[in-house]
Image 1: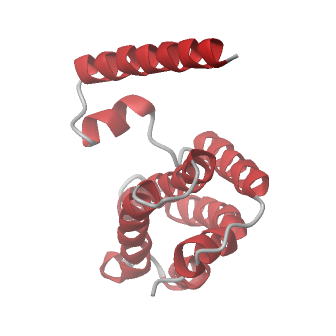
Image 2: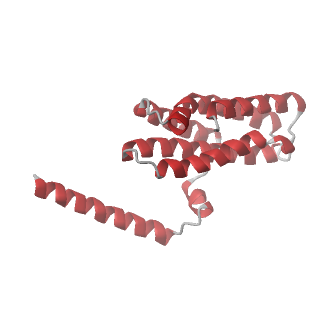
Image 3: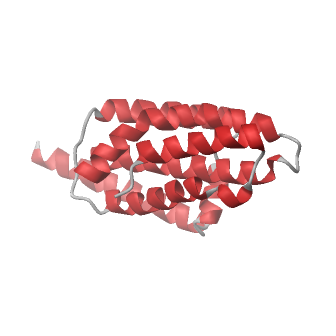
Length: 177
């Protein structure tokens, strides 16, 4: 069973080692483990029988974790080439602090099926997103859609269907009142 708390501790150790000894791209396994676990956990969360509000909070948090760590890995791999070696590592350590703050909540939900403080999860996820975006550790929505091979037409169709479903729900609520 994967632990995000331990995963981020491993990443933090790896980053500190890279700061002292230089980046070794053959030692990025801690990042890969978090990325893979976050991908799997996103699917688990969407397939859970939890209320939509709970699914949304934890899916959003694991999606943010996945996105941030993928970008971190990409930036670390090219840091030496673009002469941003220590800066990228220092910024990565700063982001790991935020990742570590949300990790216990994700671990409790994914590994122990415990739901604690949904509003806190949402708050920490938003803070992570803002900080990662500000520091350049978050992909924009267009890149995410491209990576997921989702076309603009599919997004439009989804929004239209969502709008239709909301309209039907509102009509149903009006009729039952």
